Figure 1: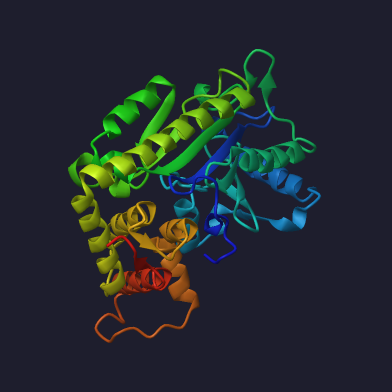
Figure 2: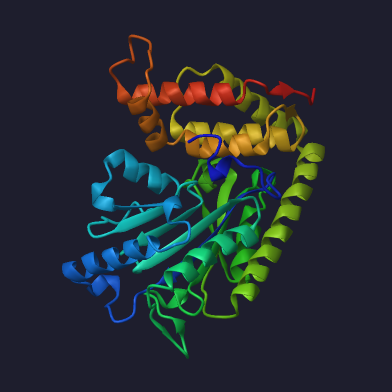
Length: 358
């Protein structure tokens, strides 16, 4: 939640690509898969994995904790950052986090071990390098289940082989405005990728804020290099499509674009309360303005960081650990205090924005 967080750093193709993630699924040899684990096995696996991190060369950079020891806010923050799955109870689960939050490892989730590594922009090399380091370091102490025919053995057949899943978050307001999202999804599906709404659906069945996630479907075919090359090529093509659509929007729908951008900026600057879904949509509009040069004064990375900083769990953590004085009529209402703080954080982030496209 500070400027040192991984998501607050500028990245490649940041005008379209928010972040890249690499995830490795692994299971310990000689133990049943998580769905069939006894409580004693789960506890033993957690102890083995946590101990393995203590033998890393940079062990002081990692913190391990049982999910049951996290309070509700801590869990919510990790869900918002894509580390934990909100749909799982985590009764026997654990999580290991690197101090910068860029690398995490869940224990006893869908698989015994799931290593995730994040980077800003389109940068699988950095994410892959960090993830491989954790994987290799763990394998000095832990034996993972694998076979010559199927590679790493995982709970899902789609994750077998390399055990690697790749995903990218993108912002596609221009393609959305031109009504081309359907064809984009079809094209990606034919190439073997999933295309989903990052924050759920918005108006008219589109993705809220035009934020999408593109992910590899399975890790059975091809090497890690082939899988990375395939998704990278698809995202590079998608990035060029969005940039071309951006130019088309400014040529054929400029008034509509200006209206969306200026309304978004005005509501961001002057709202007293901002509900989460509304804020996501408004931030998308401001980012659209920066992309089309109608607005200036803020880096893309600042806008992208807001998408994490203004989530409910992050705000509740700030409220619990800070000294705030709210207006009397909302001082006793936690939801309204979060909406008020969200508005203040957005306004602070956009303080230097100026209109340049008149």
